[in-house]
Amino acid sequence: MKDILKNITKIQDNDGHWYWITHNILDEFNLDLYNITGIEYMDNPDAFDIFIDKYDKYRTYGDPDNTPDIFNENITTTNSALEKLLIVYGFELKTYYKTNKYFCKQISNQDQLCIRIFSDVDEIVSVEYEHIPLDKYDKYAIVSFKNIKNTDKLMLLIEALS
Image 1 (cartoon, rainbow, N blue to C red):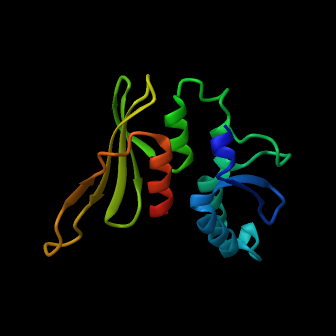
Image 2 (tube, rainbow, N blue to C red):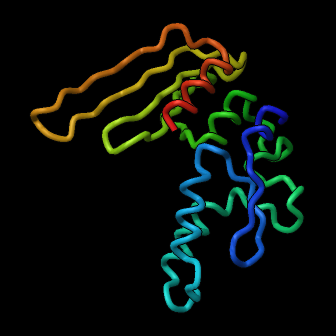
């Protein structure tokens, strides 16, 4: 939990709700919050619903020191520490077979970072940066990072790409 807390900003929305926002999505949170500032829910309910759907999992529901469900180790007891870390940083589970799990995070329209782990032993198996072509003039490419075998190196890569 200490590794997660050093990458968290506790922040309030315009209604006084507290959130724990990871540094990699803080700018996006602030922009989304700015876009609904000064608007009443009834004037644009879709904008508010999108904001709530996106950030409600980071909400503390009261005191700023309450742990949101996404960070609460009691709620996600079946996830390994590495899985929790990837989920906190916005990775989604794409495929899995038992403990062999493949997480991906969209970096841009064309690029995603994918990480395969063995969740039973908290081991990073592979880290790949995938470029997907949008037109026939572009090429598909994958860059594999063979030396990223611990969370410190992985965090450096994630922060660099954020």
